[in-house]
Image (cartoon, rainbow, N blue to C red; front, side, top):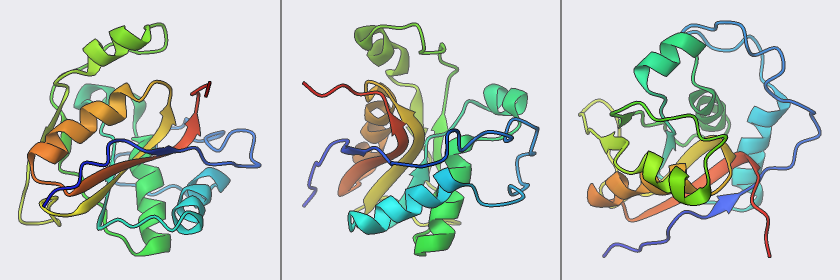
Length: 175
């Protein structure tokens, strides 16, 4: 039986002003960062502090063109460190199947439309699948939840039991 949990977002407190400071140099797709930053450790600490349970960590993917331009995927870097510190495996089988517009200037409704159908789950035998598993989506920032929601849809369609989001920073204003 599938339990649809939705996208629960846990903002991560960090004492570092900018955990990505100095991270703008091209790291290359397979190269690991030279050291672990406070934000990356905070993701793993928050996982443990809130006693989250996940079978698989799944970073929000960039479109291949955006990844080539940027040189790295910050969500993947966060997921890899979290995996090393928690022992939960990373699954990179969620792909961004089309480029999306930058969301910084979009309204909440426009963000939902921008992300609709942007992600696709493609299973391979090389990594743990998502069927009947608890998935934890890792991302750097959450503003409206549109990206996490768009990521969760193909994961539920592939049989995920639950999908939760863990982000480094949240811009949500609770009322």
